[in-house]
Image 1 (cartoon, helix red, strand yellow):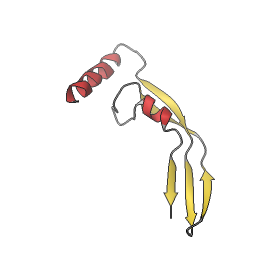
Image 2 (image 1 turned 180 degrees about the horizontal axis):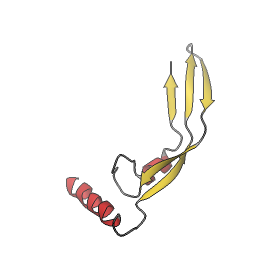
Image 3 (image 1 turned 30 degrees about the horizontal axis):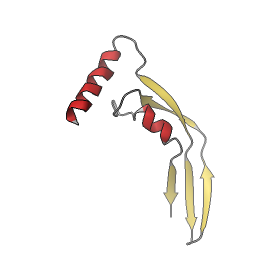
Image 4 (image 1 turned 90 degrees about the vertical axis):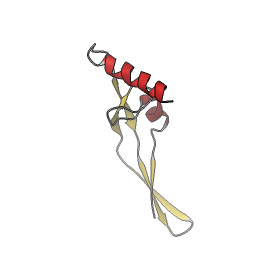
Length: 80
C-alpha cells in the first residue's frame, strides 16, 4: 500500500510543473438534519458550493480525490 501511495504522490507532483490538470472541482450539496425528539427530523439545505479536489487515487495537499468527492457530493450533517 505504501508503494502505491508513493507512486501516486510522484505522479501527482510530476504533473504540476508540466501544467497538466492536477486539480478539479466538484459541486457539493450539504444538508443538515436537525433531530427533534425521537421521531421528528427537519432538513435544512445549504447553498451548493464548488469544492477543490485532486485528480489522483489518494488525497494530496489537503484535498480529497475527485473520484471520492463525486461519489460523496451530498454530505449529511446531523445535529441533535
